[in-house]
Image (cartoon, rainbow, N blue to C red; front, side, top):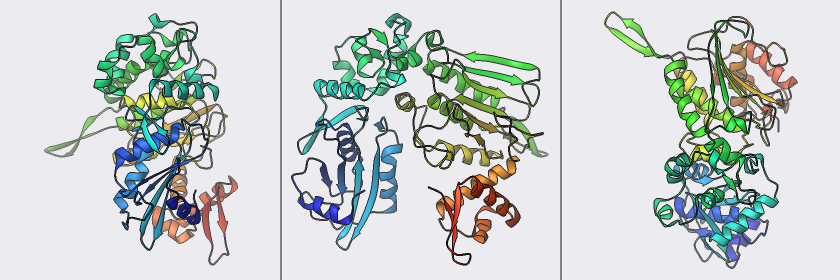
Length: 478
């Protein structure tokens, strides 16, 4: 990030092609377009661009102070989903006597084009402009040269006939592209799909992403592209199978079917009498949380590991959702769930466009809130294997009977302690240098249990104690 001295130099350099200024802190449209342009880096400078807010066109500080609401809004630029795929950017506030300056540092994307509300922007000298067809061609070629991800690889055994084109034309395209643009678009469906990375013109075949989203039978070409639901009449896989179903077909349709099934078949709303004349409807599991975790499994799974599907298993005392592929990129066991990264960013983009994902990197926090509100224990995450990620949910006001083991056979700590571990990690993350008594006040956990959990977190090198016994405190390890 910029130092104060570097920022002052940028304020006076009015001819820079990597800087844009705005006197306002809340012009979302202008900011989104500028971020798209910097991330696309059409000139290929491979240098970050800087959006300076609270600054006049002549480089003078505007004299305004940024509010908490405006600061929160800036943080939402990356997570709200108007910018797709989500670009890499950082935000910092500088407080000067003359006023505040917010700096948004935008890093060039290795996989452009980055679009703001469906439109790609580029820098043309010291100004920004909508990308032309030629600009988009250059950006797409640059994306390919950076290394083709599995999503963009051609599914060479398939053809256009293997796709549900009505699903693309009537359901996806109107959400992804503005109506007036679609009306004026005279290109063939192959060219339209290629522009959105669903079709490979060179091989005349759908991409893997296009096959997963719109393929009539994607599992025929990508064997792992389906989800398996099984209900057991026991606490393990040895019990009788009460129901099972393989959710196959175009992913956009599969997700709609899953949503309907979870709401009616899993959440299980039922009346509970709270007085002689009054009943209250309660659910074993909040349907939104299950849907969010299923979407996470679909978006984050590694489709190149074997032929195993996403597994959605319901036992008589819990639900387990697992997907092939462990934590990815910047996400590690030490920083999960506070840091997230996308193995399949284009698939995540499509889910956002269809409205299945509301915000990026906010799902786990909301899942926990929904579960607590419904009376469920917090979710238990098993993320220590490189080839699998698993989450376990317990029913509302219920407890797990017996032990849950990890995928390598190790016995997990009891659920209450895992929930306590997450609370303590959150408290330390939000309050660096926190002490033992303050941890008890924030989490409501007994000192004896805190000591036991802190020892385990220290042994696992997730936290560390810094400073003297009297003045020091606990910090999350980085």
